[in-house]
Amino acid sequence: MIRTLALFLTALTAVGMGQPAPARRPVSLLVTNGIVVTVDGSRRVIPRGAVAIDGRDIVAVDEAPAIAARFQGRETIDAGGAVVMPGLVNTHTHAPMVLFRGLADDLALMDWLQKYIFPAEAKTVSPEFVRAGTRLAALEMIESGTTTYADMYYFEEEIARATRAAGLRGVLGQTIIQFPVPDAKTPAEGLARTERFAKEFAADDLITPAVAPHAMYTLDAETLKACRALADRLSIPVIIHLAETKDEVKTADEKYHMTPVAFLESLGFWGPRTLAAHGVHLSPADIGVLAMRHVGVSHNPESNMKLASGIAPVEAMRKAGVAVGLGTDGAASNNDLDMFEAMRQAAFLHKLVAGDPRAIPAPVALEMATIDGARAMGMDKVIGSLEPGKRADLLIVSMSSARQTPMYDPVSHLVYVTRGDDVRTTIVNGKILMRDRKVLTLDRAKVLAEANAFADKVRSAVR
Ligand SMILES: [Zn+2]
Image 1 (tube, rainbow, N blue to C red):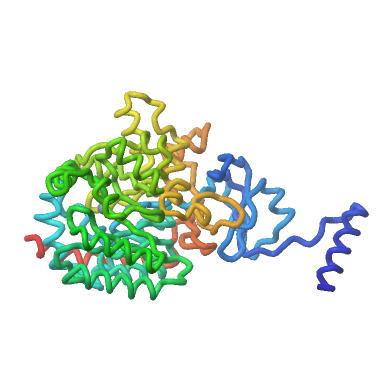
Image 2: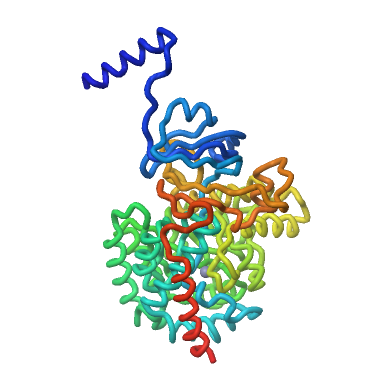
């Protein structure tokens, strides 16, 4: 206390006498000399800005000289005029499905699931498979600028361990499904697994465990209610596929004479910290329910186009106040995890369907991939923008390729010409996961070799 007071007085005297400024605050990391695209409340873009990071948190975002005057970084990264932006938030994946990438394309969803994906999963998915798949997905995400992702798969505790080791942030949902799956013979087994998983990661800085009932058409009412009850009891989020196809809406109508949203509402299923993937076939009343219940929606334009599922009413949802984030879906239906492409495709798709090029402009696509994705997952106080007090999840994105030259507007460039490969450096929770294209938390060659070894097993499983 005395020491602090003495420092304060010295500082005061120095300033008063017009002498050099007081000692700068030491912080763990400075990222300086970048075009800082904050995606904060005022959507500030700082042409020559810097971000001060201490430990896992952002402590200041400002003009580079102002940061240099106030902070002394133990480590400094010169962004060299590249864009510094919040890490991308992928609101819907099945991470290990990267191992099924390109296995079967150009099929209807039910054919694709029932003839290829479910049989391949039944024969190959194991803790080892899931670990190898998650490492490959994590490598791809780090290399293409995703810092947080929402997942639904099997052996989710293994996904969580691999995600944490890679240094990524995840909201990871243990899948619950009515029929026997690789990690559970019954939904009750799946729920017990979820509870163990949730307890193991209850206080984790990077992992938020979740329960992931697969969809209303793959679960009975009792199990759907049990998933909600478990989530409430453990205070964990819920992730579910919702109204992805016309078939799902037809099934709900035939079985319950309701839409999928209305059926789930009738069970008391909806609530905050609930993330619904797809939301393609929604009525205005459905959208009203999602808004009223503060349900977040993950829009997956590439998967919806590839599987011809339909076009989600994104503008209507946004107008109703629903938080809509962007997702890639599993790599088997995309076929990559590049969120830059998801932004571009979302912008293009909604312009086309609206017959209006003003639909989903570049700043909105960027918001959907960052702050709105965070909001859809109930994490917008923690991630999704570059602001003091939030976690230090950020990217340095090169803007010097021929494809990016010249640059009039960095936000336009991020959405319309930038690719995942342009990401130079990825930082999560204040830790550098990739620096100048070198991933530091994973052995790249080993991850790729391991993935290729599993591909042989997948090939023989669907033969
Ligand atoms: Zn999905």
